[in-house]
Length: 209
Image (tube, rainbow, N blue to C red):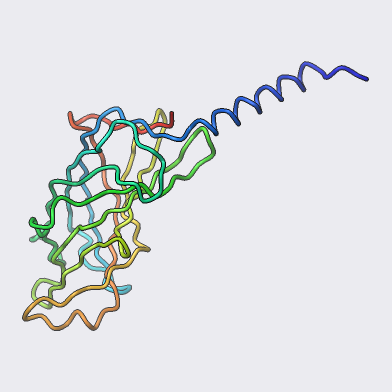
């Protein structure tokens, strides 16, 4: 029986190491639990109509642990502060402060283990008053069945280079007193890419362990 070549042995060992790394990489590690996000622009869609290309929004929060379990729908953090732009854009976007804190749950990741390209979180409880300002105003509230989806893009060294609002996710708008126009629209969507900082204003890193 011929002996396996050194190249074949090396390939086999590399494959075993990859399988081992993939099997053990069940957690995500953060180098800081505090974070802040700035979306500019923060885009609002009513059905497929786009409003508020010049609007902006900001948020700050904290992950509950420095090590996160990759468990779908598992609670991983919260947003405790948020603000939207009211003037200077075509869309009214204000945050209902009484709805804070908003809950963040883990959803999924993309990439080939042991490397990851992005991590998705779901935002539940976020409440905005949005509309065209002088035209109509609606309440948009994310729930467990209609969450806002946040996609963290992971760059070299695990740096979160962007936190993007998944504009494919929809929320049913609710009429506010005196408006009566939200029923015209079947859904509201939010989009836009946000810059992310850690609690000290530096880069935030998220890696597999």
